[in-house]
Image 1: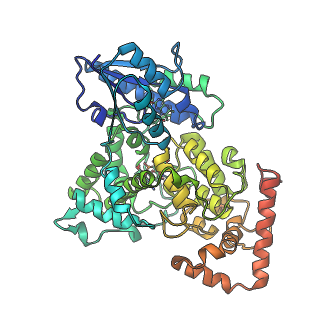
Image 2: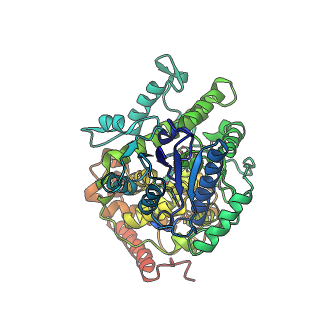
Length: 518
Ligand code: FAD
Ligand code: DLZ
Ligand code: SF4
């Protein structure tokens, strides 16, 4: 064998750097299903099924091209269960001149790769991941010397660098950011479009059975599995999004509706993160929709910002700040994750809805992640490490490079403001404005104190009180702290009392909150 090319489960593109100079005449591509990767956190069943199915389809496509693929299945005899063990066995089997691999998405695996260079009997070449628009070094250079990083500055640089939505040196339409137009409530009775799902074929069905048999006790349902697991299906999903959802994407980007988990979102993150689509082709396709008059600028800009801006930004930040990034706990939060994050059994209707949808689909959209399960974790002072593990487990698109900055930084502010300028804490009024959840909740979002009050209302003020030393000096928190100072001692005591009662009940019976108890 010439070169052994090791392709990880989230690197499933023919154009990944480890395959660019593939010589089908003498090289072998190695792909491995290993227990360690399925259990380093106990991933949602759909995430494992998605990855294994996508891996098997990708291997079959390479084989159809005439490439020799050595594919190790989870249950194959002798499977050692780890990347390192399987690579060692493959080197012994094929005796290649060298191993080529593309750098991984997670620090954990990056460390393993450093060891391979020492321990394998053949040279190991680790190549840069060419699927991102901003190379790791370029981001590191940009971030050097800045304590606070700001997405908007980075994003404008990326627009200029790629020419996306640029008219010469100017942003299309004359503005960089159309966010203010992207915060509409859904009109009552509004019917979002039907979204296409993908029927599992025989390969995917076999994987689903395998996952049920091997990981049956993991969180999540497999019954509704409908993710695209091939490049062709991922392209079909992209076309469907561009035609049916992108033209309205921006308007209702922050809206939440019972029974409508997908609304106008792209549903492309699992495919993007696993390599079935590239960030560049998705952004170019969205721009084309704008240039052709098929989608308005505020929607297209809002969408491109998520990928060219946020996605590239969190990935750059992760690599620039790891391995220390996840160790900080700027707000000193430490409460255990309540059991209802798994069971969904809580009287907080918004949380119950989001957990139920997450279990069914391994998906929740951005505002659900940020303002419902995330906001609760923030204002209840949940332990960052436990919250991070939850987010890494429950979503089909979760890898540490993207999960950690979003959870540790954006949601929990555990990085002390590296990622975002202020914590996104909010009271029930925000959730009420952007969703229909409160109408069917056992709590009353309009009530501020006492047993009927929406817990977000007093937990929000309690959060501000508890973190006054750390946050009151933050310019962007000036307004809520001014309001807090105007509340008076009696109201403050009442907030403290309600919050303590709620949080104590959580700790006493981790599965319950006051209403759920009854
Ligand atoms: P859309 O809303 O349609 O957005 C389009 C695309 O933009 C997404 O596919 C995604 O690639 C990108 N994007 C949007 N927001 C972000 C962001 N904040 N960071 C990175 N990319 C973004 N995304 C993941 O891919 N994996 C995660 O593990 C993950 N964890 C998150 C945890 C929290 C607490 C929060 C607030 C956000 C997280 N996100 C994560 C970002 C975002 O919520 C998802 O990318 C999005 O919901 C995926 O669904 P979609 O494809 O329908 O996205
Ligand atoms: C997430 C995942 C799972 C569940 N299983 C595998 C696997 O069996 N084989 C594999 O190559 N990759 C898997 N992955 C994706 C890896 O965890 C991912 O490549 C690393 O986390 C680096 O991003
Ligand atoms: Fe959530 Fe409060 Fe609304 Fe209930 S009232 S759904 S807990 S925001």
